[in-house]
Image (tube, rainbow, N blue to C red):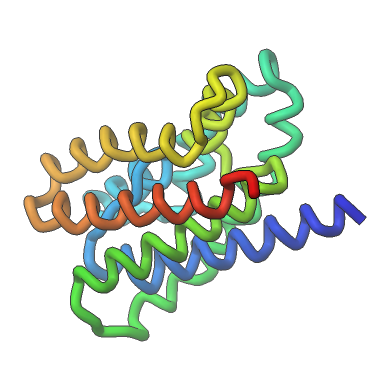
Length: 189
């Protein structure tokens, strides 16, 4: 039963993540942090596929996981592959809405945070820096959402410098929302 729940969490989490990215973040050049944020930067600058870039950029972390944290590797490889494919499949959603960019940053952050949080509750993730944050959280007992928020802040700052001040401000709104939402979903009750 647990594996069925975990598989469902991966699917639901991946769909929420893909909706957040494609419907709310990508149309307004808003960044998330971590590997997703780096993939969005590559998409905005070079029009590369977001999901494919997530897989490529996550590969070094998954190699580390294979040798040092095999449990994390097995728990996250499905989340990485599923979410990356769904993100690229949901690309047509980018043209469905036309809302104020600040609302898109907040709503997109909620969707992304829910997707990541749901997967993390079942000891899986999209890999990348989420996986790295999970390693750090297990070793330090610091809430995984706070670690993700810290890593995301660094990526968003880099992206803001490469893209625009507007991207930086909207992305800060998005990652704060992602961090709060992820923390709320993953906190023990």
